Length: 420
Image 1 (cartoon, rainbow, N blue to C red):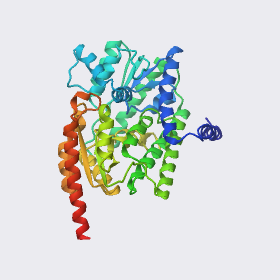
Image 2 (cartoon, rainbow, N blue to C red):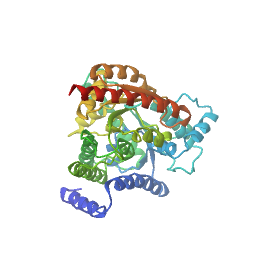
Image 3 (tube, helix red, strand yellow):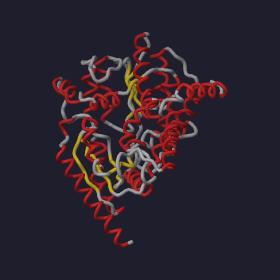
Image 4 (spheres, rainbow, N blue to C red):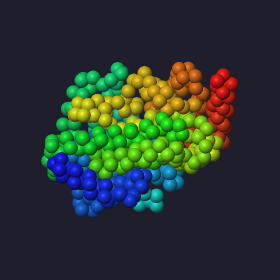
């Protein structure tokens, strides 16, 4: 698409959504992804199940429709279907110890019509392990059970602070193989010019997303941090679409205006500002949100949401960006990300979700919590939970831990007030 055609397309999108609030536009884009995949499936086109951090630029360039099992599982869990689907998988012999997203995904290959949310069954799976090594076996299992192609891009753990050229060279070879596999599956040919265009749009989406989330640095924040958990679905599944870039830019503009007007999307007085560490507890999202909001606690920082803001200027930088996903980076860089959030967003403490499903993330959380507390002097608290299995969460424990965190944050505020 030429620059002129792209401008015309942008004008059309802005006209189409001019009366639609940014948050609703974001929700519509997420919904359209499922609709378009279902239509492609009905038309006989191959549709894939794709990992959240698989380089979607490849799929977008080839115009291959995919859906995202992680997003689907989160939505199913948030709508109350997590335990039922986990039980289906466990009845088939899958352990309760493996990721609840994986269990829901495996169950959905059998329970193909459920009340919470449906998506097409896959003709192939596209896997990337930069955020989760469990995903390799999860997707291998899907491919074996369904007898479909398995496409894998392996992003090695970064021992050093930044991804070097050796990592880029390793990924380039895998990109070439994945493109060839997808050409054979889809019958479509690679278009380098379109790839360049998709990269430009994807990077613009990443900048828009990070710009919007950065507004939490203002006090009060113009939005509730739990809103970001909802908006991030588009950052996961539609990064290469022009609509997504425009939606996030509009969201940032809305937040900017709220800051100028002194208005916050957080309901009530913002008394305390915290980092929420880890994935949201989707089955208990209402309780976890209300338990904070009701006591004036706003989430103004989360590494998980920003993990999907990929910004780059060329193919090499694209590959380096995918190497910079949380869980693929060194502990030192991971810690620095949290410390930077705390400084930039003027936080009062950190609440850490020890997520039974996400062991790779949670394994470092104990040391991360200790180092964060030591280097910032800020209080922290942990609670046990799960991103999709409601059985691994206790409302009483959560409430007690939150209350303890609030008491320490309040004591710190009173101390600072006396010293001022």
